[in-house]
Image (cartoon, rainbow, N blue to C red):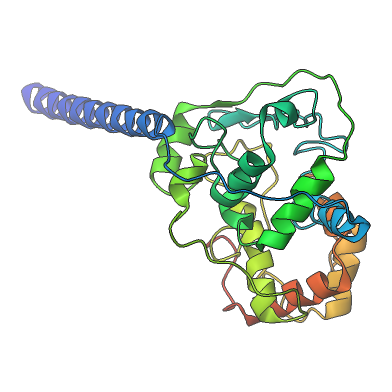
Length: 304
């Protein structure tokens, strides 16, 4: 009886060893693939753009960076674009958006290089950005790209150091598995970038705005824990018209959420939600996003 039990134990240990070794090899291969991809130099030409001094164009750039592309929130580049708060996401990553004023990266990049970064997620040296979700906002038309760059060039220089930005082993593995896009340029089809339609209060335009929600709420926008995120990170909610999400919501309910951060049931949204940007959405963007969310299949919470 003892020999039988010993043999079973030895067998289980052998299986555990094989599984552990296989897991180690798999993780090492995924990390290597991530690191190799981040060293890739993309042959995407730098466009030529002409900055505008038209106040209406600059105002459009200001609106976009404070709403649709929430660059100016504290969790991104900050209100003065000199760098945001550091997000410690456990084994996934430690992320800090850098200083992009003319006292830092803003001086290193040409106007065309900024435009390429926004459209393709490619840095000055031709390599991929880390984490900045260009793949979700690169649908903006050329006129909006020009407006954003024109507005950024009006911002005063701010001398401030950049915080840490490191991708952990888990983050690299999840990126390679397509669960958390951190190697940004790899997730963009550089030959076929789909541009959005002109702004309109329609579900068609809202579909593009909704892409900016997928990084947190998942591909299907039904929420659930972000893969690999620490337990301290708030869990994104369900945005589909399911009973666990926005079923029964009116546009007024949605607008109140954007303005106050209060859900229909009185629940206050966590600070992780970029409300400082969403409250800056104009009427067209609000109606478009709500119209799109109402077209989604009702999906139970957590199916991301």
